[in-house]
Image (cartoon, rainbow, N blue to C red):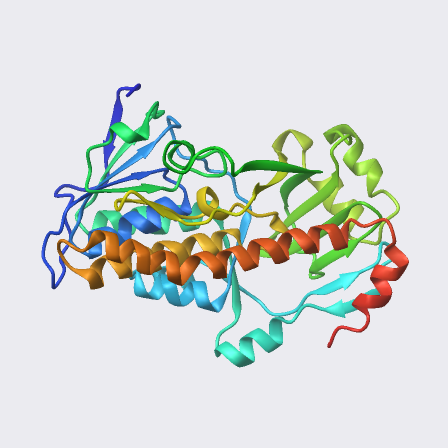
Length: 365
């Protein structure tokens, strides 16, 4: 393996469990899904190493929506209170037309009534810091930065977790290359404005959409999805005649700070998330999806908690059974979310905005 920088997030590398130490694990990828998996495995008594190909962790500040189910997963991982200390509730949002006409309300109030807690929004760096702090409290796991992995099949750990994103080398090595990243013809730009708009939700136009969410006091998270041919220099022009505060939000942020990424998803869906009795995929490595439902971080957290719970419940010597249980719990659920998100992308960027808007008006308020 390449690279020579290793930082230890703690000292012993071992947590406690009613089952005692049960084996060694390598988690490939130090994003949200990978770090959450490392936390869960430490809590289950495993010796864990995290490998990250980047020399440092990404610190960009986009907001993650954390659904109540994902909050419960974080509670089970022991970091729910830390999340709530840094997050803001998301209670009111609308779908609008470019002229500002409200078409429907997002079902945030209904979600809160059913779950007994609101949807939360948290800046990505905050969530990363929360998970790193949890690793420290548990005695730590070595995080090997700057370690691109040439062949995951050479890893000698009892358990290998691929949390290395849509371009997963673990997936390619153990599951083949039939399933891989597929572009959908859209690019997204993300930024943080220096004021609170008080107007949240998404605005849908023809072939493009614009969203705004709270992220922390005094700031607004925004994202713009446009056809792939539109460059950063043209984004402001693409939304210049849209309702306030869309043009003001774009004018308030420096394009040099915008994050740009090509919207892709994993296709076709994998027939399994586990392989060889010792390999499991979580997060985007398993089911990368378009961002339309805002469920990428949630599904990664649900994967991490379900995998580590299955491993802990199975006990020593029953890892293949634990991985099968994880796959049975998570694969179809996560793939349904990915499928729905892809279909919503088609719907929001379709060529018949009049028909789309009429259908949206039929949604319950």
